[in-house]
Image (cartoon, rainbow, N blue to C red; front, side, top):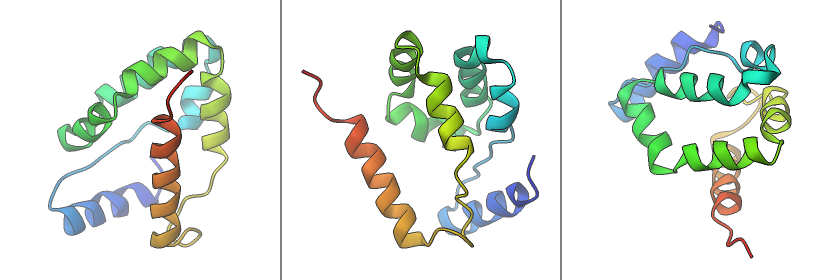
Length: 111
């Protein structure tokens, strides 16, 4: 668990009134590239109920399966693991824009 994780969990509760937690790191999942989809699913199943509901609302299971079948899941997670998304590096406004772009990309019609 990163040093910032307990602080993030406390802030999440303070801001939202809900408990959110996620202790596995992408770095540890990337160490076993043959089982990346299973590890990501395990990580998601280990989330707090509140966080899991958010993930389920965006139908991540289908997206995981689609990326795994296309052979890009490892690369996508690897790219995300390189991002520094700490609040000292990314403002709340910028994080909102990032989140909107992720949602927009995930919901583009596929032709």
